[in-house]
Image (cartoon, rainbow over all chains, first blue to last red; front, side, top):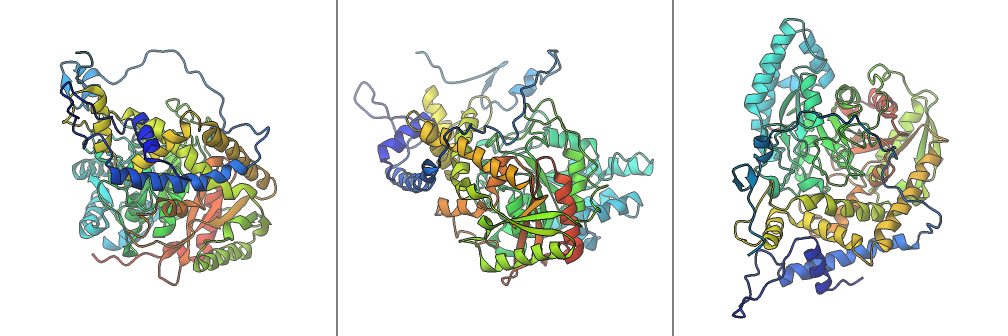
Length: 113
Length: 488
């Protein structure tokens, strides 16, 4: 099965592994290296995915009429636990892994200009 | 002390109980062995100070007759996928290279409660995605039997550490064979329990419907000791099974007289190394000589296990790994100042090639237009695979197969061909899809001098039966007594 470079790129964007280059007001393209697969990597990935998808296509031949899906190896009923407040991780500990922290919050790049 | 490092956990636990050796001495000996064998690359983080403190406390408890369990003071390693409060937990990924969890997962918590000493965190494939331990941001693990060979994966560090006498037992995780395959390739015992038998609370998720934690040991009894400590219901894991845990050690000597052992024809076909087949068939004959009845069986949907597994595991992985966006923890790209670009750059920089490949594949099979053809279809085929086992266990008590189609392959042999790497797990994947327990026990050395594993499968929650068969097999063959030559 062939999977095109554009298809791989579309999926990589869905998976937040790539972000399209953007053009600024002067028509300059943003630098691609950190957020885009290069052409060689895309071609390699397309070939590898094509081979894997070729292999898994054998599933299509299996007759699964009236067969329910299995979502877990052991189907367990959903359980309720008592609705009780219990101690949890304190704020400092919870924020201890944040790459950038400001006060009691995680800092992120602004999303509104 | 050096010779104790090649002994079983059970033997060492007896020496500790008799106060013929101290936990502090054991820790020192293990650390010396680790220092003497750095090329194996088994550990990502070693908690030397914490281990020494733990050993002192364990020895103090022993001195006052207050030992917490049989494994109090025994050094054990944890795969670096299991959360440990205050001790770096990386998933062998650049994404989490500096991540220090603020809490203990259930495994660290239960081992601490039993007094076991957590010596460190073992190397593995990144986010447990791999079959050779070559997909680690911290470099590959080498096989103690031959350092030009892989140790298997993804829990290769845990397996190799036990095989090389660096620790007496270790924990791994098994999503498609990641405990059993490295156990086979390094000549130790590895058990994947029934799905839900061991809590996944605090396990870094790869594929949530398949992931399960389990122990490595040098003998079935060693594995039984660790299982006793880690098995059981945990309300913090919504998939944890509230099923009573038996006393694994009390039933381990029960023998296998009259037990029916099924041998599925589908596991002895094309692609199986003839040398591996010979040893596995000899192993099955040994079970027959020990009193078991050998019964040919069929598991007709086995041929679809590889495809089913790689659709389901990548789909779940793409969803589970969406949380790594560089915001709350983990790697954040410093180059990007716009949110969506920051997500993409952080993930692109933080994940290795195999993880990206699986995320892309998983996203593809879940995406609009492909969901029904791949993901929904795979879930239904999974039902047929599970039903194969249900039918088989109406007629037999356990199933015996090879664990791996070959002995340990050379480092680099399969890294450029993902599909060929995926085939390395072809004997183990169906077990995770069905959720049943599986165990690999040493079945002797092939002509190339490398270990071969015999895989034993049982019905849901029958880990005790597998341990009993493995113990009887060890007694009959002595294969589990073999150790690699350590050039210390």
